[in-house]
Length: 116
Length: 112
Image 1 (spheres, rainbow over the protein chains, first blue to last red):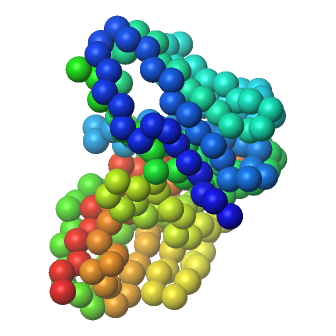
Image 2: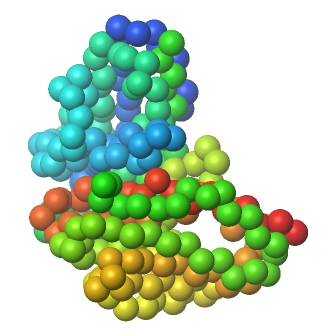
Image 3: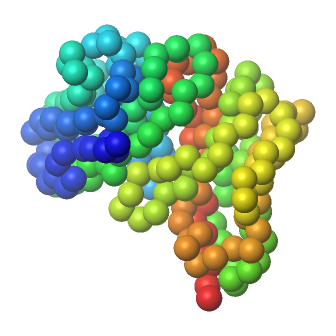
């Protein structure tokens, strides 16, 4: 079974631009979560999508948004990029959607975003 | 105070050593406790998870959770150079959906 794939793997943008990152979950997985990883803050939860609906959201500004398609693929968008948005953005998929219990999350390799 | 605290290291040990990695946390509502391993330029991969307090063993790895002290540990026996990676503890809150709260990670280097 193929793992979680993320595209692109590396991205360089300038301040003020916007960016869209893509994530394809493991086949059959319906929940997709996004995380931001930086040396200073570590891994931080951005949001989770299940059945095309945002089910949970972390403490990030509205410049960070996402969506999920009917095939469970997900995209996240960051508008008006700031230098501090430089990070590794990780996508994780889970087998099913019981939001009240732990489901193992499988991480992709991430997209390394550099904002100049 | 962050919800999850983890010493970033780095931690350097010789091959064959026993490694102890630890995290403390502040939210007593956490129910699931996980350890992830992350190699350079890769995403985190789940090593072990534990529900509530107690010990769990998987090969050379042992995870311990002490909810009374809000303290979790990962022990690696007979450490190998291939264990060189960043180890992240993570915790799950029952009512938080799939969101995980991570420690910042400890970088481990095992020399041969």
